[in-house]
Length: 392
Ligand code: SDX
Image (cartoon, rainbow, N blue to C red; front, side, top):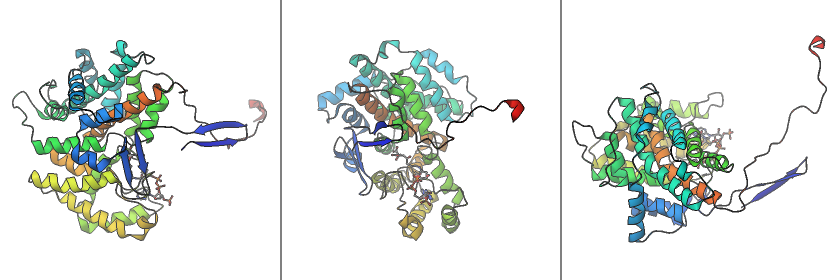
């Protein structure tokens, strides 16, 4: 709904953003993408099909999906000079720092898709961003581990291509395990879009000035990195590893309840959900399934399960309506696939790029769209006269 408020200077602002893309009911724990429930999409769709849905508003026909996937596939390579940007970073740079820099640098490479008044150029920029973000993310990982970059292969699926670029090495082909590919694709689906969260609002605000779309996505990546937002998936797994054993959970529950302790249960709580995050439900189930199929028995999953069980019965968390969110279980699966924790938020950014792009397009295509201009409630000094230094 649009909210309107008027205060002192007679200024009227509409604190609103109308969108047709994603609906969330935080009290009921409902998440719909263009009307389709997230659990149905996660179990029955795939990331390319969801990307088409978010961008176009309807599920594609077989022919439409093949055309869309083919277009994305043909944009997966990056300009060879873009690879030079990685070499400016130390090898131990956080991959999210690399993503901010390299995606921002894309704004200097594609002048034929940045006239945002031209719908065709907007579409080309959108396809380029969705197509190249996995390549850039995989290159960030390769650079961090000192391995050579791996080029995309057009005969692989979007998600399979990303896994191959990430884990394949010249000495040994990476065999794409269908279980891993399906789990990765499901994780991408669950992270694709989430209404007007902080990073999406960042992309919209940056884009509202007419800024270069590649630069706007870089701004979204910067915002997502924060531990209160997308950075929570890395922080949550680090927290679970620090807890290490179910016997130590009460100590961390007590810390999370202590107002004098800045510690928060990472992967718990949400600005909107005051019920179980529907994405966390899917991920919690997937974590058990994927680890079993991969034959992996990670004690961290037991810690996560027990922590959730204790927190959901603790009066503090019940009263504050704190539930697991999308970041609570995702790291268990990503770790089982082989990603280091420093790549977790990069994977979130990879998936959320399609949501940022869809939201950016929706905003720019609106003929009524104006530059964003949040206002403030001024609580500082009333007007006063300058005091010369000699009198202070
Ligand atoms: C994402 O917006 C989106 O849609 C985001 C996202 C997306 O898809 O884009 O869903 C992705 O960012 C998920 C959230 C990931 N972040 C974390 O898991 C970090 C840990 N969570 C907290 O930092 C916190 O829950 C926030 C930042 C997510 C929300 O903080 P708020 O706005 O303070 O939450 P709230 O108003 O519901 O808090 C109510 C109370 C507060 O205490 P009081 O002021 O009432 O005394 O609960 C406390 C909070 O301090 N609280 C927690 C807590 N989260 C909230 N206490 C302990 N542990 C926590 N995790």
